Length: 394
Length: 225
Image (cartoon, rainbow over all chains, first blue to last red; front, side):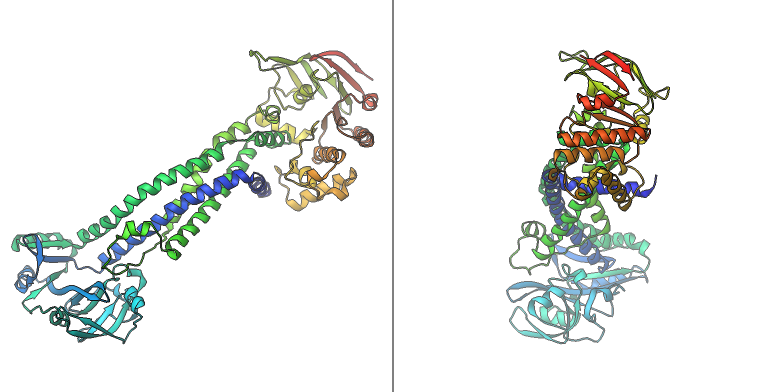
């Protein structure tokens, strides 16, 4: 059979959607709400997860911190020498960082050694304007996109920060991170390590932590194990552990809000199911007429499935669109606080929103499949009913 | 040729409200007949037409099309046969109100490989013959009862079926429409169509070539002219 018949049946299905308006509005509105609430959470949790993964990309192979009484303290540089002595393929680079008040918010001021650190290639994708720190930079800073937006600063502007004795330190902004890592860099100011030592008054004999790079990636776990053995007070975090920790931290929050959202989702999907699976006397009579006029069981079924498909696709499209509006333009009220926390002194974190292909496909599937499944049985039941009985509404 | 043998239809069998709508009816309708099914209200005329048009299965007995026993065909085969051979004119018209007149007429073409332009062209062609040219784009609710009846007839004719089943086609229309319906049936009969009409209308009954009279579901008289 040619395609024209299927076009005809699709046209009939669409006309049915407009004919039974109350049913259509009930299904579309409930499913749209369902997809919107689910989508708004998933877009944010996907965004958080993506940021966590990106953040882990820039992390060293191993981060070594020093503990005393269970709290992190400065790590002696002798530990760096101990670690580097393990093998020629192992390098330990100091990092000096701490917190700084700026305009009533707390920011992380991180001093790095651009020469010693292995800067991943991906960093050039993470820089929106300007450049990353270079070997001879002094009193230079790379800041996050959100920071730049909030304070209206750009590359070559001077950023003045005050240390704990309220002495001002000026930094020339040389680069701004892109929006891709905006959450990760929202509270981050990166400066040369020597500037950080002066700012925090930390001598050359200490660092806040050590970044360990291992030439042979397969040896990372072994090196980490050796560090634990040789430096008993060390807290050793591999990149994988760091990534898991980040993903788990955000995942747990999104999981919590998702439970509430899933309850709403199930409720509205049930409403849609109820409307989709209920066949009115008028619909049954219509099926009888169509059968009398030569429509086969499969024709009737095709019309009903097309109807469900169109309603599902329409609802999913509206839901995804409204979910994005809710997240991006409205800033995701309610779920934002759940997923990012309520901290008042920290910077206002931007909400990362990510719409991955698989997420979109899943949302469409959630809208379409319940409707298809919900309408198959009643559609089949009415399609196999004798035309005479269907027209009499039996 | 359409033939029935001891055709019986019982609704709600075995239940308190069991109704024997048709009881042991055997008739023989030749090709080109204008066959009349008559009888008082509730005598089983509509049910007999439904059985003849394969809209329902008999409880007992058989329906033959050209010596082929079709009442035991599968649902799919009966649908194919209906689609190819039979056109229906229902007593209550059974038009779909959401569609325009021409869309109602072309409904049987939706499940065929005919595009919209062709469907409209064919529908307008049939409607013109029935004097409905100016009503092509009217909604069903905007049509008079007589016009609705003619739309229902046009719908039955659009696939050029061999057999036309009409259930009380003049019961809900005025005298003039009734006369035009009769005139149309005569034209169709002359064109070789087999027409089976349930009616009380004496004018139509006079034109019949076969007459089946039902009473309480049973055939009380069957004659041919």
